[in-house]
Image 1 (cartoon, rainbow, N blue to C red):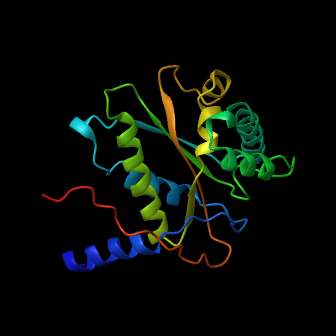
Image 2 (cartoon, rainbow, N blue to C red; image 1 turned 60 degrees about the vertical axis):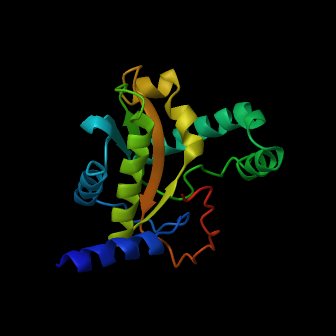
Length: 195
């Protein structure tokens, strides 16, 4: 593959990546997940610290309990959201059968070790690499920010064997998309300065 072909593949993944919230029952296998994690750790990292660590959750019962913990945390934290968003989220997840993870059967959590001021940025860069790699493999992803507060609760850190000083920054559901996801229009870049 030439450098031009590689660039075209990357550009294609950027423009074709979609937020997926409906998945087939097929779970990504361990080899696929390892490839995605390898793509994640090839992200840029401040001072080459590589502060990230990962958790993979595919156990149905664990996902269900984590979803419930996330919904409870959402109820407590709803005051921090704009009123319209809070109302919509609370309505959406008030159904006991609803799940923060929709029908996904795989959740990848990106944790950051306390290694300086750019840990969160490094974790998000790793997340973007993972999501673009997943797209190039025909998989769908969706960031589930509402799961992060629950993942950082002491009881979940203990269950996941995460040290107290390590924090979850990104939670991504992953799987084979059930059908096509149409593109959403994006605003043009807002350029504040160009000197």
